Amino acid sequence: MDTTNVSVVSEFVLTGLSNSWAMHLLLFWFFSVFYMGIILGNLFIVFMVIIDSHLHTPMYFLLANLSLPDLGLSSTTVPKAITNLFADCKIISFPKCIIQIFFIHVMGGGEMVLLIAMAYDRYTAICKPLHYLTIMSLKTCVSFVVTAWIVGIIHAVSQFVFVINLPFCGPNEVDSFYYDFPRVMKLACVDTYKLEFAIIANSGFISMATFFSLAPPYIFILVTVWKRSSGDLSKAFITLSPHITVVILFFTPCMFLYMWPFPTTSLDKYLFIVDFAITPHLNPAICTLRNKDMRVAMRRLGKRIVGPHGISQ
Image (cartoon, rainbow, N blue to C red; front, top):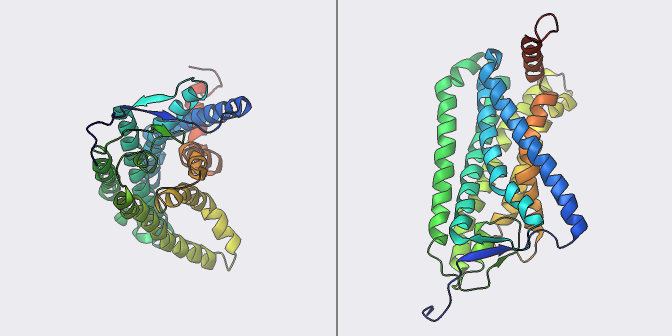
Protein backbone atom coordinates (compact mmCIF):
# COMPACT_ATOMS: atom_id res chain seq x y z
CA MET A 1 0.00 0.00 0.00
CA ASP A 2 1.34 3.44 -0.96
CA THR A 3 1.42 5.66 2.13
CA THR A 4 3.47 8.54 0.71
CA ASN A 5 0.47 10.86 0.51
CA VAL A 6 -1.25 9.59 3.64
CA SER A 7 -0.99 11.44 6.95
CA VAL A 8 0.64 9.41 9.71
CA VAL A 9 -1.18 9.03 13.04
CA SER A 10 1.09 9.97 15.95
CA GLU A 11 -1.48 9.72 18.76
CA PHE A 12 -4.54 7.71 19.71
CA VAL A 13 -7.81 8.55 21.44
CA LEU A 14 -9.55 6.24 23.92
CA THR A 15 -13.35 6.16 23.73
CA GLY A 16 -13.56 4.80 27.28
CA LEU A 17 -16.28 2.64 28.78
CA SER A 18 -19.30 4.95 28.70
CA ASN A 19 -20.51 8.44 27.81
CA SER A 20 -22.90 8.61 30.76
CA TRP A 21 -21.96 11.03 33.56
CA ALA A 22 -23.64 8.79 36.15
CA MET A 23 -21.66 5.79 34.86
CA HIS A 24 -18.47 7.86 35.04
CA LEU A 25 -19.12 8.54 38.73
CA LEU A 26 -19.81 4.87 39.37
CA LEU A 27 -16.66 3.80 37.52
CA PHE A 28 -14.62 6.45 39.34
CA TRP A 29 -15.76 5.07 42.69
CA PHE A 30 -15.23 1.45 41.56
CA PHE A 31 -11.75 1.95 40.10
CA SER A 32 -10.58 4.17 42.96
CA VAL A 33 -11.71 1.82 45.74
CA PHE A 34 -10.36 -1.30 44.04
CA TYR A 35 -7.07 0.31 43.03
CA MET A 36 -6.49 1.55 46.57
CA GLY A 37 -7.18 -1.97 47.82
CA ILE A 38 -4.79 -3.42 45.24
CA ILE A 39 -1.96 -1.08 46.18
CA LEU A 40 -2.36 -1.39 49.95
CA GLY A 41 -3.16 -5.11 49.94
CA ASN A 42 -0.36 -6.28 47.69
CA LEU A 43 2.25 -4.01 49.28
CA PHE A 44 1.13 -5.29 52.68
CA ILE A 45 1.67 -8.89 51.56
CA VAL A 46 5.19 -8.12 50.31
CA PHE A 47 5.94 -6.22 53.55
CA MET A 48 4.67 -9.04 55.80
CA VAL A 49 6.56 -11.74 53.92
CA ILE A 50 9.79 -9.73 54.19
CA ILE A 51 9.61 -8.85 57.90
CA ASP A 52 8.01 -12.01 59.36
CA SER A 53 10.38 -14.99 59.47
CA HIS A 54 7.45 -17.38 59.91
CA LEU A 55 6.36 -16.50 56.37
CA HIS A 56 9.73 -17.30 54.82
CA THR A 57 8.32 -20.35 53.06
CA PRO A 58 8.03 -21.25 49.35
CA MET A 59 4.30 -20.51 49.24
CA TYR A 60 4.60 -17.00 50.66
CA PHE A 61 7.74 -16.27 48.65
CA LEU A 62 5.78 -17.02 45.46
CA LEU A 63 2.75 -15.13 46.77
CA ALA A 64 4.82 -12.01 47.45
CA ASN A 65 6.27 -12.20 43.95
CA LEU A 66 2.79 -12.66 42.49
CA SER A 67 1.84 -9.37 44.14
CA LEU A 68 4.37 -7.51 41.98
CA PRO A 69 2.81 -8.24 38.56
CA ASP A 70 -0.60 -7.66 40.14
CA LEU A 71 0.58 -4.20 41.15
CA GLY A 72 2.19 -3.59 37.78
CA LEU A 73 -0.79 -4.75 35.74
CA SER A 74 -3.19 -2.51 37.64
CA SER A 75 -0.85 0.49 37.79
CA THR A 76 -0.32 0.33 34.03
CA THR A 77 -4.02 0.69 33.26
CA VAL A 78 -6.25 1.76 36.16
CA PRO A 79 -4.78 5.24 36.96
CA LYS A 80 -5.05 6.21 33.29
CA ALA A 81 -8.61 4.90 33.19
CA ILE A 82 -9.51 7.01 36.26
CA THR A 83 -8.02 10.23 34.85
CA ASN A 84 -9.69 9.67 31.48
CA LEU A 85 -13.16 9.41 33.04
CA PHE A 86 -13.45 13.19 33.36
CA ALA A 87 -10.97 14.24 30.67
CA ASP A 88 -12.34 16.10 27.65
CA CYS A 89 -9.68 14.65 25.37
CA LYS A 90 -8.36 11.15 26.06
CA ILE A 91 -5.24 11.37 23.89
CA ILE A 92 -2.04 9.38 24.20
CA SER A 93 1.03 9.49 21.98
CA PHE A 94 2.04 6.44 19.95
CA PRO A 95 5.20 5.77 22.04
CA LYS A 96 3.24 5.92 25.31
CA CYS A 97 0.60 3.63 23.82
CA ILE A 98 3.26 1.09 22.88
CA ILE A 99 4.86 1.33 26.34
CA GLN A 100 1.52 0.59 28.02
CA ILE A 101 0.95 -2.41 25.75
CA PHE A 102 4.48 -3.67 26.41
CA PHE A 103 4.14 -3.54 30.21
CA ILE A 104 0.67 -5.12 30.15
CA HIS A 105 2.12 -8.17 28.41
CA VAL A 106 5.27 -8.31 30.54
CA MET A 107 3.16 -8.38 33.70
CA GLY A 108 0.51 -10.69 32.23
CA GLY A 109 3.06 -13.20 30.94
CA GLY A 110 4.91 -13.19 34.25
CA GLU A 111 1.70 -13.68 36.23
CA MET A 112 0.80 -16.75 34.18
CA VAL A 113 4.10 -18.44 35.07
CA LEU A 114 3.72 -17.54 38.75
CA LEU A 115 0.19 -18.98 38.84
CA ILE A 116 1.63 -22.24 37.47
CA ALA A 117 4.37 -22.10 40.12
CA MET A 118 1.82 -21.62 42.91
CA ALA A 119 -0.30 -24.50 41.62
CA TYR A 120 2.81 -26.71 41.57
CA ASP A 121 3.68 -25.55 45.08
CA ARG A 122 0.26 -26.49 46.43
CA TYR A 123 0.35 -29.82 44.57
CA THR A 124 3.74 -30.66 46.12
CA ALA A 125 2.68 -29.57 49.62
CA ILE A 126 -0.53 -31.64 49.60
CA CYS A 127 0.33 -34.61 47.41
CA LYS A 128 4.04 -35.01 48.29
CA PRO A 129 4.39 -33.46 51.76
CA LEU A 130 7.47 -35.52 52.78
CA HIS A 131 9.45 -34.20 49.81
CA TYR A 132 8.04 -30.67 49.87
CA LEU A 133 11.06 -28.79 51.25
CA THR A 134 13.41 -30.72 48.97
CA ILE A 135 11.39 -30.10 45.81
CA MET A 136 10.37 -26.51 46.60
CA SER A 137 13.84 -25.33 47.60
CA LEU A 138 14.90 -21.68 47.50
CA LYS A 139 16.70 -22.38 44.22
CA THR A 140 13.50 -23.76 42.70
CA CYS A 141 11.44 -20.79 43.87
CA VAL A 142 13.96 -18.26 42.56
CA SER A 143 14.06 -20.14 39.25
CA PHE A 144 10.27 -19.83 38.98
CA VAL A 145 10.42 -16.08 39.60
CA VAL A 146 13.28 -15.47 37.15
CA THR A 147 11.52 -17.61 34.53
CA ALA A 148 8.31 -15.62 35.03
CA TRP A 149 10.00 -12.30 34.22
CA ILE A 150 11.95 -13.75 31.29
CA VAL A 151 8.81 -15.28 29.81
CA GLY A 152 6.92 -12.02 30.33
CA ILE A 153 9.60 -9.98 28.54
CA ILE A 154 9.95 -12.46 25.66
CA HIS A 155 6.17 -12.63 25.29
CA ALA A 156 5.87 -8.83 25.18
CA VAL A 157 8.78 -8.32 22.78
CA SER A 158 7.51 -11.02 20.40
CA GLN A 159 4.28 -9.06 19.97
CA PHE A 160 5.93 -5.66 20.16
CA VAL A 161 7.80 -6.27 16.89
CA PHE A 162 4.49 -6.75 15.05
CA VAL A 163 3.16 -3.33 16.00
CA ILE A 164 6.14 -1.00 16.15
CA ASN A 165 6.50 -0.67 12.35
CA LEU A 166 2.82 -0.75 11.39
CA PRO A 167 1.60 2.30 9.43
CA PHE A 168 -1.30 4.21 11.03
CA CYS A 169 -3.08 6.78 8.90
CA GLY A 170 -6.48 7.02 10.62
CA PRO A 171 -8.91 6.59 12.23
CA ASN A 172 -7.16 6.83 15.58
CA GLU A 173 -9.97 6.01 18.07
CA VAL A 174 -9.49 2.92 20.26
CA ASP A 175 -12.77 1.54 21.56
CA SER A 176 -11.59 0.69 25.07
CA PHE A 177 -10.26 2.16 28.34
CA TYR A 178 -6.76 0.74 27.75
CA TYR A 179 -4.48 -0.01 24.82
CA ASP A 180 -3.71 -3.51 23.58
CA PHE A 181 -2.51 -5.16 20.39
CA PRO A 182 -5.85 -6.26 18.88
CA ARG A 183 -7.51 -2.85 19.24
CA VAL A 184 -4.51 -0.87 18.02
CA MET A 185 -3.63 -3.21 15.15
CA LYS A 186 -7.20 -2.95 13.91
CA LEU A 187 -6.46 0.71 13.07
CA ALA A 188 -3.43 -0.07 10.90
CA CYS A 189 -3.51 0.91 7.21
CA VAL A 190 -2.52 -2.58 6.08
CA ASP A 191 -4.15 -5.99 5.94
CA THR A 192 -3.79 -7.40 9.47
CA TYR A 193 -5.20 -10.82 8.62
CA LYS A 194 -1.82 -12.55 9.07
CA LEU A 195 -1.13 -10.62 12.26
CA GLU A 196 -4.36 -11.99 13.70
CA PHE A 197 -2.92 -15.49 13.50
CA ALA A 198 0.33 -14.26 15.06
CA ILE A 199 -1.63 -13.00 18.07
CA ILE A 200 -3.59 -16.25 18.32
CA ALA A 201 -0.33 -18.24 18.18
CA ASN A 202 1.25 -16.03 20.83
CA SER A 203 -1.16 -14.64 23.42
CA GLY A 204 -4.08 -16.93 22.58
CA PHE A 205 -2.08 -20.14 22.68
CA ILE A 206 -0.16 -19.13 25.81
CA SER A 207 -3.37 -18.23 27.66
CA MET A 208 -5.12 -21.45 26.63
CA ALA A 209 -2.10 -23.69 27.28
CA THR A 210 -1.42 -22.13 30.69
CA PHE A 211 -5.05 -22.42 31.75
CA PHE A 212 -5.25 -26.12 30.86
CA SER A 213 -1.82 -26.85 32.34
CA LEU A 214 -3.23 -25.66 35.68
CA ALA A 215 -6.02 -28.25 35.58
CA PRO A 216 -3.98 -31.44 36.34
CA PRO A 217 -2.34 -30.24 39.59
CA TYR A 218 -5.64 -28.92 40.94
CA ILE A 219 -7.41 -32.16 40.01
CA PHE A 220 -4.72 -34.18 41.82
CA ILE A 221 -5.06 -31.89 44.84
CA LEU A 222 -8.86 -32.27 44.87
CA VAL A 223 -8.60 -36.06 44.69
CA THR A 224 -5.94 -36.20 47.42
CA VAL A 225 -7.89 -33.94 49.82
CA TRP A 226 -11.07 -35.87 49.05
CA LYS A 227 -9.43 -39.19 49.95
CA ARG A 228 -7.90 -37.80 53.15
CA SER A 229 -11.20 -36.29 54.24
CA SER A 230 -13.04 -39.63 53.94
CA GLY A 231 -14.93 -38.73 50.80
CA ASP A 232 -15.89 -35.23 51.88
CA LEU A 233 -15.46 -33.39 48.58
CA SER A 234 -16.76 -30.12 50.03
CA LYS A 235 -13.61 -29.78 52.15
CA ALA A 236 -11.47 -30.13 49.05
CA PHE A 237 -13.43 -27.45 47.21
CA ILE A 238 -13.28 -25.10 50.21
CA THR A 239 -9.49 -25.56 50.30
CA LEU A 240 -8.97 -24.74 46.64
CA SER A 241 -11.93 -22.55 45.70
CA PRO A 242 -10.06 -19.22 46.20
CA HIS A 243 -7.15 -20.32 44.00
CA ILE A 244 -9.41 -21.77 41.31
CA THR A 245 -11.53 -18.61 41.33
CA VAL A 246 -8.46 -16.41 40.75
CA VAL A 247 -7.29 -18.64 37.89
CA ILE A 248 -10.69 -18.64 36.16
CA LEU A 249 -11.17 -14.88 36.54
CA PHE A 250 -7.66 -14.13 35.25
CA PHE A 251 -7.70 -16.40 32.20
CA THR A 252 -11.29 -16.02 30.97
CA PRO A 253 -10.81 -12.45 29.59
CA CYS A 254 -7.43 -13.41 28.11
CA MET A 255 -8.81 -16.39 26.23
CA PHE A 256 -11.88 -14.45 25.12
CA LEU A 257 -9.84 -11.62 23.60
CA TYR A 258 -6.76 -13.36 22.25
CA MET A 259 -8.42 -16.41 20.74
CA TRP A 260 -10.62 -13.98 18.76
CA PRO A 261 -8.20 -11.04 18.59
CA PHE A 262 -10.31 -8.71 16.45
CA PRO A 263 -13.70 -8.68 18.21
CA THR A 264 -16.78 -7.12 16.67
CA THR A 265 -18.27 -6.23 20.06
CA SER A 266 -17.07 -4.17 23.02
CA LEU A 267 -17.54 -6.99 25.53
CA ASP A 268 -13.81 -7.61 25.94
CA LYS A 269 -13.11 -4.14 27.35
CA TYR A 270 -15.58 -4.82 30.16
CA LEU A 271 -14.17 -8.29 30.76
CA PHE A 272 -10.70 -6.88 31.25
CA ILE A 273 -11.93 -4.84 34.20
CA VAL A 274 -11.76 -8.21 35.95
CA ASP A 275 -8.05 -8.65 35.11
CA PHE A 276 -7.01 -5.09 35.89
CA ALA A 277 -9.14 -4.29 38.95
CA ILE A 278 -10.80 -7.36 40.47
CA THR A 279 -8.33 -10.27 40.25
CA PRO A 280 -5.35 -8.24 41.64
CA HIS A 281 -7.65 -7.30 44.54
CA LEU A 282 -8.63 -10.92 45.23
CA ASN A 283 -5.15 -12.22 46.03
CA PRO A 284 -4.53 -9.95 49.05
CA ALA A 285 -8.17 -10.28 50.13
CA ILE A 286 -7.93 -14.07 50.13
CA CYS A 287 -4.56 -14.06 51.90
CA THR A 288 -5.53 -11.65 54.66
CA LEU A 289 -9.09 -12.78 55.33
CA ARG A 290 -8.90 -16.54 54.70
CA ASN A 291 -5.26 -17.38 55.44
CA LYS A 292 -4.55 -18.42 59.03
CA ASP A 293 -0.76 -17.89 58.83
CA MET A 294 -1.19 -14.34 57.53
CA ARG A 295 -3.73 -13.49 60.25
CA VAL A 296 -1.36 -14.80 62.92
CA ALA A 297 1.49 -12.77 61.38
CA MET A 298 -0.70 -9.67 61.48
CA ARG A 299 -1.36 -10.23 65.19
CA ARG A 300 2.37 -10.64 65.83
CA LEU A 301 3.01 -7.38 63.99
CA GLY A 302 0.30 -5.67 66.03
CA LYS A 303 1.90 -6.80 69.29
CA ARG A 304 5.30 -5.56 68.14
CA ILE A 305 3.86 -2.14 67.30
CA VAL A 306 1.63 -1.71 70.34
CA GLY A 307 3.97 -3.40 72.80
CA PRO A 308 3.39 -6.07 75.45
CA HIS A 309 1.39 -3.74 77.73
CA GLY A 310 -0.79 -2.18 75.05
CA ILE A 311 1.21 1.06 75.02
CA SER A 312 2.98 2.16 71.82
CA GLN A 313 6.73 2.06 72.27
